[in-house]
Length: 441
Image (spheres, helix red, strand yellow):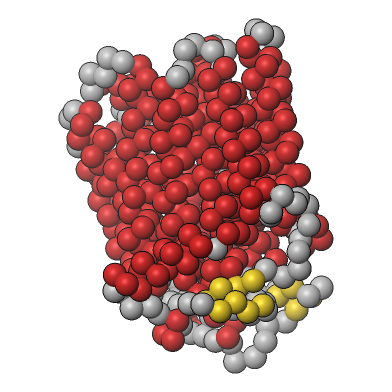
């Protein structure tokens, strides 16, 4: 294997007949080669965000409905309702290991479209479920269908951008993506006022179908033919080994897994915390929107600051604050000094630093691996989704009527993420270290 310095160029940009106009060193618009299906930079960001937002929607829109699902399907143990989320996450994560190599071999479009068809069909199937096991099976298949949107969406960004341009696009995408958790529980609450919990799955089916049509009509193939990799066990294994042997990628990928695990632990218990502990009732979606809104604000600020301060400085500072505030949250919870507004301010602050760290850590993990972007994205998606779901389920199952398990989960996961970052940077924080290396087999 050889390592060579990366320079900012993109597959999509290489298809252009002439360079796009620039302002302050940044492209104003990226247009693909087929003018009938050309994408502006704005539409590109919006479409990628919509694809990735299907994941957040499939989780957050149903949070208000978990008690109704449990009651309707005979779930007697309250914490077992968490498995509605876990089943989706396992399907989402496990399939990503296959989707990545498939997209590296056959391109991005068709695996993405097939996955979205599965998502739409599973959403319809969930509306027909008459027992909890069938619902969990449909949720698993929903996750399988969403895997393409998660992995291939990131791969498309990596096909088209690199370096700090990639970090800015990922931040803007993440900002739009985080608008979904702001409104999703409220949408779920409104849908429950108009019909039974199955209405939520009908809504997901219709929205998924709309994004599917948008993708079919507007998204061109972004993987150049010369960059396709054979679909052979040896070649796939080499891609996985390359990811595992790239110190920066492996460690930042694991750091992302830990912080995702803490987030999933909170999501699985959010309804119990806001409604059962703090008694917010129908105001639960508003509180959840406030928390998610801070993530969107953080992602927007990151997109503006990353070009000036760099991915490492921002993500390292953010994780230090994330872990320190989580420790304060844990201590206050243990000693019983955590009224709602103290809890909520700490939660929002922690989520802000989550938002300013995660997209940068994901970019740092992907940056050296442009040659195997699909495989790399699948590995990171698998570890963050399945690993995060397992960690989050463990945290969620510890729910005992207090926020202590959730706060402790945030602190422990933040500390483990910092250990991974220190290992990636060989014990040094805050330095950009020049341009990242790009690895090719």
